[in-house]
Length: 100
Figure 1 (cartoon, rainbow, N blue to C red):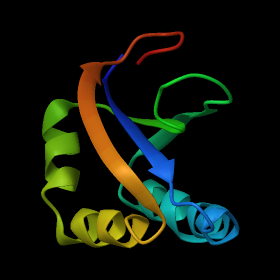
Figure 2: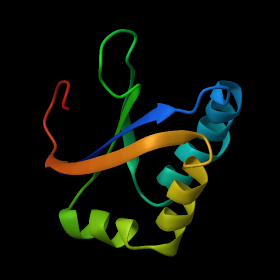
Figure 3: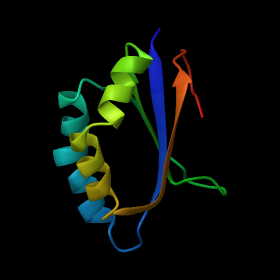
Figure 4: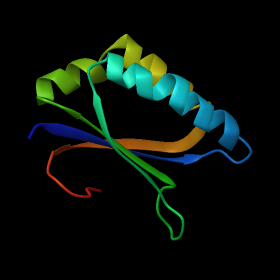
């Protein structure tokens, strides 16, 4: 099944349009270039949870750790922080269905 990174964040008020353009044009393609398979994207409509939950898969923990330690990942997440706050992630064993 592999390994999954579950990422959460909240979009900064007033940055929604710029955020969505960044995610579509830069964030997702960059993740794919790093070997991540984007598997989920969820938007919280109601409740006290992070606004966005996104997930990507990698075949092994070593492969994921290599990405997370790379300068490309650090640059990408730094750029994401121009549009979001409360960015966090966790690594879990991948399984089918919704994971949080």
